Image (cartoon, one colour):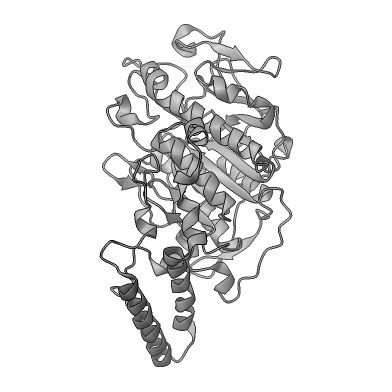
Length: 443
C-alpha cells in the first residue's frame, strides 16, 4: 500500500479532524480566521528591531541608530524603515522570556508553548517527554480542512540546527502524526517553481495515475474486510484529499504564485523567504488556517545566513538579514490590508529568543532567552500598542513579562480556540492546548 500510494504525499499526514471519531468541533468566536507565523531562524535581536537602546553604551547600543515611529516616544531600529511604517497596526511585546539559551530547546518552547525538559539543551530532537504539539498541529486537530488543503502548512523548509538536526516541536507529537502540519519544501522565488510534493511526476500519466487510485481503493476495501472494521476504509477519504491536490485545479491554484503581478511579487522581495510569505497569503486565501514561514539559510552570507549572529552581527543585519525581513514583513502586511484580509489574519513576527546585550569579541551577539521582543498584527490584535518594558540594556523585563505559553494562548484565543481546550495524548491523558494567559492588553 505504501508503494501504491507513493504519490509524493503521505496519507498519514492527511487525517482530517472531522473524520476522527470522538472529536467534536470547538465553537469559535475569535476574530482571526487564519494566522501566518513569520519565523526568523536564529532569533531576531531585540536591540536592532523592536527595542533599541539609543542611550545605552556603544557596546550595548551597537552601530545602528533608533528611528522615531508614528507613535510618539516609540522607536525601532533603523534597519527596518518599512516595518516602522506599520506600528499603528502592530502590538509589540518587549518583555518575552523563555529562560532558555539553546536554539532547539527554546525554539521548542516558542513553537509549542511548553518549556523543554531540560532547558538550554542544544541539538535535541523529538522524543519524550518533549512531544507537545506545535501550534500548527493544534490547528489541524481543531479547525476544519477547507477546499482540499490541510488546515496547517509549514514552508519552505523545516527548522534545523547545523547538520540538519531537526528541532522538536514542529509536529503533532502527543496528538499523533495524523495532525502533523504539512511541510512543503519549495523555493517560490525560482522561475520554474512547482511544489514537488503536490505535482505529478513527468513519468506519471493520467492513465497510470487513475490505475493506481483504483488499485489503492481495492486494497483499502480488502484491508477493511480483513480487519472487520471500517477504520481502513476511512483512509480512502484521506487519500481522496491527496488525489484532490493532484488533480483539482482549485487546490493546485493556491500554489500558482506566477498569477501574481510583478508589482505584488516585488513588494515582498524576490528572496525565497519573501516569496514564501506571498505564497502564505495565497494559501490563507484558499482556506488554510495556519501557515508557518520559516527563514532558510542564505548562501554566501556570514553565520550561515541565519539570525544566529555570533560574528559580524552588524554586517549580517545590514547586508543580508534585515533588508529581506523588513521588506517581506511590510509587504505581507500591506498586501493583506489592501485585500481586506488583515482584520481577520493574525501575523506574528517570531524567533526562538533574542541576543545578548553586549557584543562578544567577534563583533557578534550571542543567545539570550532572558528578554526579547516580538510583534503581532491583525486578527483581533490592537494596533499601536507596546506591552512590556525592558531595562536599560534590554537584559531583563522590568514590567509586562510574558512567556511563550502566553503567546500560544493569545494566538489560540484570536483563532477562537480556548487555550483550555483539551486533547488526549497517546496514553489517553487529557492535556490543555495551553496553560498560558491570554495577553488581553494587546487585544
